Image (cartoon, rainbow, N blue to C red; front, top):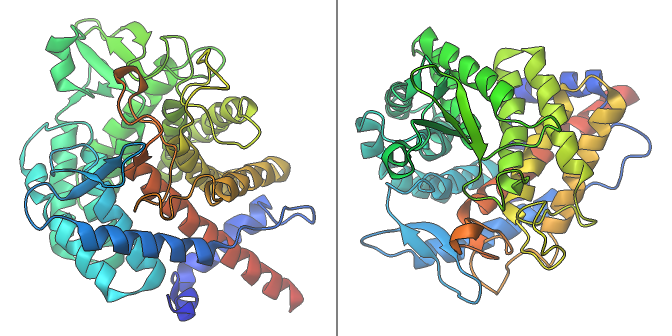
Length: 418
């Protein structure tokens, strides 16, 4: 990777915006801040690993990397219908953003285009945000291609058809209505998909999309959490009264346990909702769900797959939850007005990335993924202690976010010196 990408990493307006926010918050500017992670070598590492994956992808059939099980060396590939289909093209867009190498842009466009048919099926799935915004969303942000924009807008309209105004949330898993007898189910993961609606409402789509996203977040905030701010995975609602029937788990250890990735989705989702709305209740709630997560982490800051698994410390870790949380905290720290708290969020995020970037978690020659030790669906016995594509996606996203913050800090020091 050429080092001159650092001068092009993001536009001047973005730099000064981040700088202004950091000057207000004091995030990471304290004299006692820990030594910062060296981002460039780890981005270089991701480039090398992704090149190995790109060179080995099948020419025909399923060609979107999903996971590499423990003890295996090859990716399991899925098609565009899989909920993880947007993460590989999203990784390629992030590599293009980080390197400005046109080969990543070309590859990103190729795999992004494969997802176009998804946007043409109304009410396909709540995962449209993961699938479309990570691929076409990042593509449009970096290229301004109007064709990408139309796919995003069409997908947002499709996602909106799953909204139940009586309940106040988007239906997450349509098949589960019949399979599990859940009249209307909403999972905490769905918080991430709201970004698609927010973006569309501000870029040519209906204002109604914004209202749906806000209502979903508000309803989730009121019904999806226990008094200690730990999240249920699934909340089931009555479609006639709109009332909550029960909070349960599907991928966690138990109905009353804190499933690690679910809590990370909450931290990320409510932070994003504050960014998009400016509503103080979302910022306050993001801190509450972050604090309970941080308060129960093991020493290396990488959570066990569920904080309440009785097998701890012999339970599986979940690097994917750590990646999602690290990325979320690097954004959250720029919004928090309390300087001490903002500094803690920044430092915790960097410490998580330090661990994730160590030989204990980076894959290197074990396989072609970025990271090891992620857990997908533990109760089903799938993707346990594996390499998973969404762990890699949020790891790279977190590195790029940290890169921006470090550049803002350097600019701040230069400003102060003058």
